[in-house]
Image 1 (tube, rainbow, N blue to C red):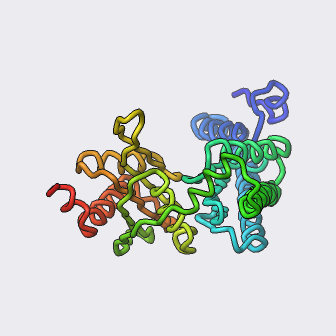
Image 2 (cartoon, helix red, strand yellow):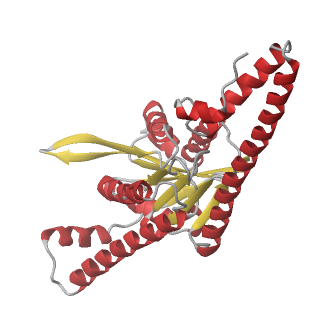
Length: 327
């Protein structure tokens, strides 16, 4: 049995990292048992491999411990905006702008990969979300191999601070009467009356909590006003997902056209399911929001069942379904 050294294999390019080494160790350990006809060489080599396995596991433990310590550190520093969702996932929330950033650390972080970054914000423009995510991914690419959660969160805070300043300046322009046509439009939007909002009780399954809210609307602006009002509630602002869908109409060239929209807010596929629910129930002029607080345990398809059931409950208990079926 011809046994190459680890150094030989690394020179030949067959072992490039810890994962390759672990696979090789497993194969050779198996062969050492199979080729027991050379007991001296097999036992000696197997003993060396056992030591290598211990080293691999120790290195993995150090990497995992390093990530956990980083999460603990940033959650202590940014305690007011950080929610630890699991041992490898944190949620960074900026409720004033309805923006959430989820960082998921992979097994190979930080040595070989960056965190998976999700930017959610149902009432924020796609351009803002794209710019923020691109900014954070650039930091990750520039500092691959380093712990970068602190740098990313600090950069995100700076990005949000700039947005706050822009909003403040625009507000001052409105108050001073020095406004453009766009500013005048925003001023009119500020006058939108928030519709009455009905909320259901909560449902809890494996520590995840679900709640639905519904309101009668007549425009997209009223739908967004409902969402902003809900977001002003600190509990809802800290939720993991705020899924919504609305159906209304807009008049163009004397024609009444349907206006529909939805958002997942990180719960992929949930928004379109709510939109479909409104469609099959034939519910119009309504804004539907289902909130989920993630409890750390994956629910699989059950989460969609709970979202749909809470949505139905809100539509029925609010009286909206009865109103529209009798009209």
